[in-house]
Length: 299
Image (cartoon, rainbow, N blue to C red; front, side, top):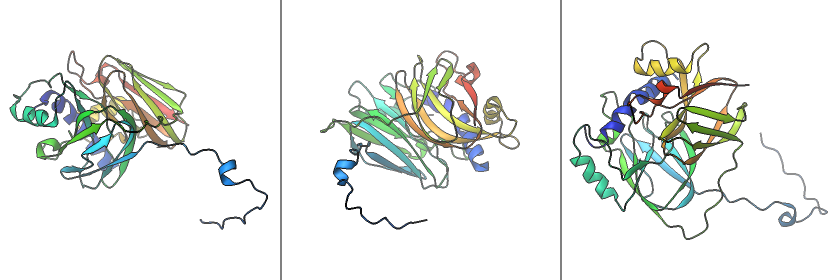
């Protein structure tokens, strides 16, 4: 197994679960102008600048995306054009390390070796269904990055071993960064729990997701089938026999302590859960084993 085998092995089981779960899974005329109305410029509120949208197209087995983007608040939109499932785990290289260093490390690291300290997970959009898309918004500082897909194919080989990894350079911005999206839901992650304020209601929302824990965490949003529990979703991922107990709806890839990511959602009434499958740094068990799974009802 190449570099980052600890991370890779820890991701294969939950992502196989995602694969199984997802597999189951008028115009009007404008009114006439009013001569007494105020000019548009005077009556309308100033337009709010939105983060630039960076589109990442995933296929089997590559990413199509810009090589260079500007630092600051950006929306990362993942479009899956392949028949298999794909996601983006963003990795940032510290200490002046480059994508070339990362490539060399992938070739030279021995099986079972932990990732080097200069590699950190910094989020990214999680898995849309084939033909679908999802997006997240986050603040990316200047530096060297990689986009990588840990999802395995039917042969159990993660996609990055088939070439699904791409370098990304984030250069200093020449203009002021735009403001973060306006969130109406706050979700905080700790070791090992979720705090949600206020309760999530049906419809469109923007979640402000913050990692207040000492370890990396991720967020899977899962819609539960009737009578099923988050633990059953996790256990089904370990042994996918019978019908799946839920359908994942995206979320974020692993993000470090202190990170904030904005996640748009559009939920109907029903039973849902948040789960984290990231392995614990002490015992290697996925965080849901330590209690990091939360059921909630959308009404």
